[in-house]
Length: 286
Image (cartoon, rainbow, N blue to C red):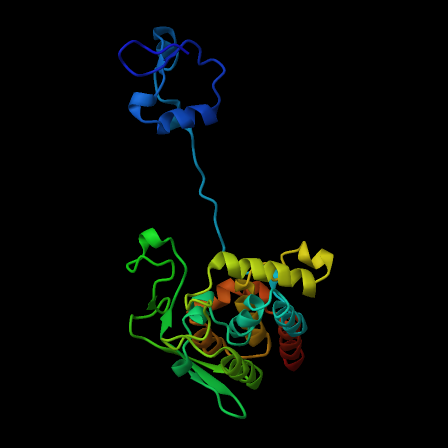
């Protein structure tokens, strides 16, 4: 299209074939880059047609897809599969993924876990005292200039902590991990050979490969444990289905009770049958 002389803008001779997407693109262009309509077209477009467009906000429930939730056997198979990914990357991540499943940690919380945060007795249940998290962000938006910036726990005061009891199985996994790989200079359990947190892309790559080892082709193509974060969803779902009271499960997971019940509502099995039995019992007693 010819440019209007001296304006740096393009002259448009025909808007008749314009689509809504083209008009939207036009509206977001800088003024000096927008095409200039001819007088004939300006007469046809006497008003901005975008004002007539109505956008409807899509409601997002935030509920966990129960198809993504693994059972304990599947979770253990996935953890075993991780150990076969690469010479050292997979084995160094097994305990990190185990923390997401057996303790319900967020990936950033697992990444920030230090030796001093772990009470790992020889027998019985252990305890994790969570103080910090290291979520991955674009380094342009972090205070440290690193992709993993240390922060306080999610939904908590900066200095707040969270106690998470851990079963003997996880205690054993963590003890073996420390014996085999040691800890970083600052005490962190999970890090690369250079001492930095594992990049999210590396974690995802290891997880994708492990899924192909542990799951059937149909399961690999499904949402089942598609992301490492789904291990946390599986953990909380397991607690609720095991009968753990919602306030206790929420405390361990770092959620509010209302959020917990809303997010995991579709992952609680057997509640309909229990409700039916209680209603029947009440009807018979009347």
